[in-house]
Image (cartoon, rainbow, N blue to C red; front, side):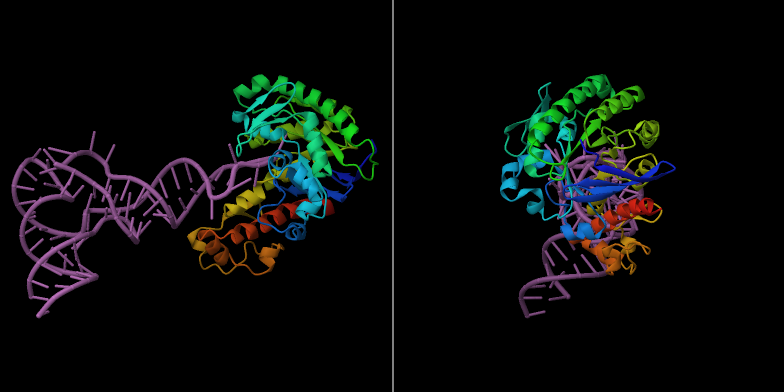
Length: 359
RNA sequence: GCGGAUGUAGCUCAGUUGGUUAGAGCGUCUGGUUGUGGUUCAGAAGGUCGGGGGUUCGAUUCCCCUCAUUCGCC
């Protein structure tokens, strides 16, 4: 596989580089807002772009269930469908195996879900996940992995999940190559492998080495930010930092708390995604300079004439929306409030990555 | 003036054969949310039960007086 990532510089463990995709270049470090079902909730794609986003994430599991990859393909693929003009990364559905664990059955072949909407049984396998992501028109395809919780039940399964993830990775690679055989390096999507291993450093190292030994465009760290303490996660990131293959891009999945974003970037991570900026925003929580949090619906903001954050350059703060107005819209349940706060939070994370990129 | 109805948490109201620390929703406040099960989840604070008197072992509950609000009739 041709090398699609170019490391431009590395200073004190902080990397900056360029990832080439068929839908455009991505400058790293980068944060990716999540648009599970084809839209970053409540936001016009242009607004997401204007907040400094370069790439967004979509979800195989959700889009497969509704409207289905056939419909997306018929509508021109994810880009035409969503009107997002930049690169799109799709999650493989592996995480849903974990987050919806109470309603699925995992075997060596794959995972069988019950569609919560229709009750239909849905089977997802490594091959199927690749096919769906190709049909969706994804620019960065994630391997189908087996994520485990970090509690006692999960620990017992960690090794099994790890080994299965590795076997599934090889199946993903084989299927990916088959599906992209007629494509060039300029027209093919990228494929990322995922390292697992829970909080076991030995397993993590082995998993990372295995993934990096395979023919993938990027390496992702999965199975973190799933309930462990911040200390545990940081400790693992610190441990992994010197073990990465420097020529590949490093994607930490599911992390988006500003404190964690900074820590990750300072420990060799190039890409991250998270629902936190948008989910928190819809629940009226915004970030302020210094990684502080503010609840926009508290009564003391009722007559506050200031913007969310004085020094912020996001569209919401720039356009003069006051805390008093936002608090009011949150109180009456107007979704504009969540949209405006989402813009702010996404911008906040993007600004962090920009600072590292430009430093 | 006469008659009726209603007064319980900041708001809207539950709460009888009188019985421990009087409840709910909303609101307020605090915390949570990390590869999205969509208007979230958890917790906390907050009440002289309009006021006074009486009956009773014990009254938000029964009786009397009074105040307030409200409706109807002269």
